[in-house]
Structures are given as structure tokens and as C-alpha cells.
Image (cartoon, rainbow, N blue to C red; front, side, top):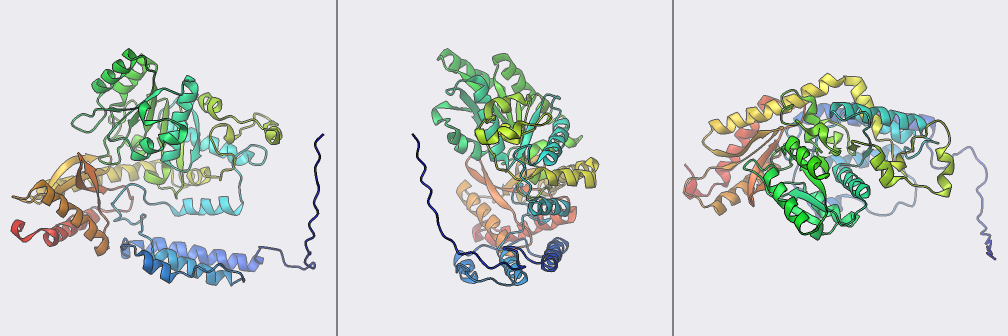
Length: 490
């Protein structure tokens, strides 16, 4: 017989009072909220006039901040002022119009307000019983993204923290559908590093990963993939999933999605597309040919917090057949029984690994409703056009070699130093990038192509102007003059 021991702990109760624990008065809540709004509006309205950022110094930051555990209460306004000072002083502004270092970028004020509302109402968006309205709003928003990306009506998905989680959720669903935990995953050197690194989180070892060759534009080569699949089949192994990329982090390259979809259909392989930033260009007419075949994917990862201007965290995973997520993630537990009551309950814990989850969909819903789809389309096309403008400036100058042309708002390049060795050019390239953070006007960092550093412009901010790009290229040339050894100067 199970015996349960009951232990009584005596805790002294406070005398009853009008004070509510852990809550400010209505007047103080309004005052704090209005001041927070003022701080955000000030941040957004003065952003262009401030530096992008400065190099972080950990000792300086730790010395600046009081790390003592607070035992006594303080005035909330004073605490907020301290928080704003810490954040403003020691943050590189990734939402700055001249932050060109990588893709995650600007959000919108509407999205920020949506996050405040979702937090303020403390919405639990994991299950139907306590969040039916938010669940339907998320379903509607997911359906908008499904339609934009050309997925069929059978498709479904959910909002997650970002591309890393979206990719893993999709690949696990592919493995669950196959029922074979030893299946092989095919990717390339240009596949986002987080995918290869984190496949181990779901038990996929290095022996199950195949690296496929790329063409001269660093896209997955279908011929190389076909050869690799044939070798694995001949060895008695089980190919499972091809991970294609729509907008690589390094160069913006888009794999030949139609050709890959044909090959996957031929061998009954799951085609997953990592479109964390590039899938947003499905809105653009100019990118339509480039993304042809996106709608044929079995699953797709996209990050609205990149090129659709949502506050972090706003990732999304879509699957061609929603039942594959349900089969992979549906959870039954005695304490969840009532959540399946009602009319067609929609429990998002059945579609992904999270039970407790916030209401991420609200910001996407509110910004699409507020600005309309055409505004997002114009903003995406603006970034594509500016990258092509940057390419023209670099090609017209004799100071730079374009390594990869403008693709989906990304372009890479390196200095031209007559008589210098590749190693010397590489050192100067890195020095120029490091100097941009010191200067503060714009931030341009490096990536590596064929194991050599290149400067990279990622131009996705809707408020970046042609003048910003021209001034940034001019800055890079001045920094190049400073970084070039005397024997290579003109």
C-alpha cells in the first residue's frame, strides 16, 4: 500500500492589508509604462544619429553594473532608468540602418507593442483550454505564411524561438515519419553551422551526415547529391533528408530547389529548406525565379525576426503536411486531459516540443494587419536593390574584388592589394572589419569563403538608404588606406 506522509510547515502570515504582493499601484504601473514607451520611441527616433556600437569590454561592463543581489525594494522608475542605461551603453544596435554585419536586424514598434501585450496579459499559448483565441490567431498567421510560401492547404506549423529550433523540429519530424533513426542527412559546406552542430541534440551523429558538393556559385550540386545517394544506397544505407538552403548566410545563395525536389521525389526523401532569412523574399517578384521550387519542400524554416522585421524571438517552422508534426510531437498526459475538450481543440504542444510557450504570433499578426503585405514586399525589394547598388559601387572602384555577387541582399568582397600575398590580403580584410566597430558609423564584418575571409554587406533594413551604402563604401576605403601596409599603398 502506498503511504503518503503529510508534513505541515508553519509559515507566519502577514497581516491583511491593501497592498497586493508583487504589484505596483495602478498609477505607478501607468507611469512606468508611459516612461518605457518614451524610452523606446526615443531609441527608434534617434537611432540613425547614434553610432552603431562599440567594442565590448567585459571588465568595464562588470565594473559599471551593480551585481549585488537586491534584498530591499527600490523605486521602479529608478530601476528602469538603470536598466535602460545598461542596455543602451553596452549594446550594438542591430536595428540600426547601417548595421550591415549580418541578417538579424530591425523590428517594428508595432511588434514591440505586441510583445508587451502578450507579456502583459501573460498569455499561455501552449494549449487550447486556456488560450483558444491566441491559438486561432497563431493558426491564421501561420496560414498567411503558408500562402506566401506557396504551401498547400494541408500545411501547418508553429512559431518557435528561431531558425535553429525550426530546422531541428522539421528534421526530427522527417525522422519520425520514416521510423528509422539511422537515416542519413545531406547538406553542404554552406549549410548554416547551427544545423550540423545541433543535429546531435536529436541523436543524429556525424556518421549519419553527408557533405554534398557545391557548384561555382556555392549552391548544392544536384549531380553530387545524386552520386552520394547512389553510393549510400549501394552500401545498404538509408537516405532520409536533404537540407537545402534558400539564402545562405555567407553569400545569400539559393540552392536549385526545383532540381533537388525532383531528386527527393525520385528517392522518397524529405526535402527540408532552411529559408531562415531568404524565404522572406518569396514576397518579391524579382526573387521569384530564384526561389522557384520553394513550395515543393516538405518543410521550411523561416525567421520573421530577420527580413520581416519582427522583434526577437520570432522563428517559424512550416511543414507540407501538418500531421507529420502531430505524429512526431503529440503528447498525452493525465494532467492534459481537459485540454482536449471543446470543439476541434488546437493544442500547439501537439505540433512541437514546447508545452509552455509564449504568444509569439501576436507580433506577426499585428504588423501584417497594421502595415499590409505590400509594405513588407516593398521593404524586401528595397534591400535587394540596395545590395545591387552596393555591387555597382564596388565594381566601379579598383579597390575591391567582388567575391560573390549581390544575392538576396548580400554581397561579399575583399581588398585588391597589388603584389600582396593571399595571407596579407586576408589580414588587411580582417583589420578593415575590426576598424568599423571602432569607428561606429557602420558595422561591416567578415565571413569566410573557401577558407578565406571576405567582407560582407547584409542590407535588409527598410530605412537604409543608397546614401548610407555610398558613405559606408567610402568609409571602408578610408579604413582600407589605414590598414594597408606601406609597401602596398598607392
